[in-house]
Length: 167
Image 1 (cartoon, rainbow, N blue to C red):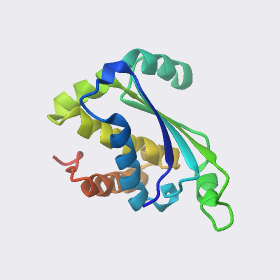
Image 2 (cartoon, rainbow, N blue to C red):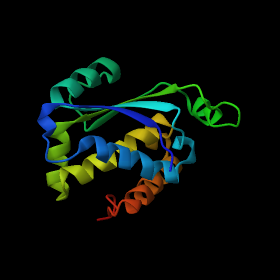
Image 3 (cartoon, rainbow, N blue to C red):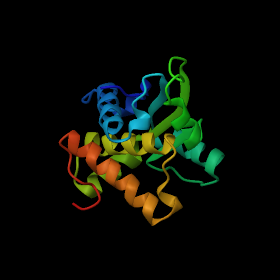
C-alpha cells in the first residue's frame, strides 16, 4: 500500500509508551486506501506531535484563534494541485503536501472525555489532518462534512477503531 511519506517529530510530552511514528504511518496507510489522492509516496507530510503551548502559538498566528486546538493542518497545495499531482506523468518529484500539528494536552483531555485511548484519538486526528491537507474541508457544508466523516470512519475501521462520531 502506498501513502504519503511522513516526516515525524514527537515532543517528549507524548511519552514513549506508544510508537507515535508507527501510529502516524499506519493512519496514513489507512486513509490512503480510502482517499486515493493520498496514495502517493512522492507527497511529503510533516507530522508534529507537539504540546498545547506550541499549538496555541500557531493557532493564534495563523488562524487568529487565541487558544490551543487538537490538530492544525497547514496545506501547501490546493485540492486541484493534489489531484493533479496524482495524474499519470506527474509522479516522481517529491512535493510537500503540508504540515499537521497535534496538541498533547488537548488531545489527551478529549480522549478522556470520549473514553478512548490517546493513541486512538491521535490516530483519528492524523487521518483528519491528512484529509485537510488533501483539500477536504468539513466547514464547507454538510455534504463535504459527511464525505470527510465517511472517509475517516472507513479508514479507522481498517485499523480496528470504531466510529468516533457515533459511539
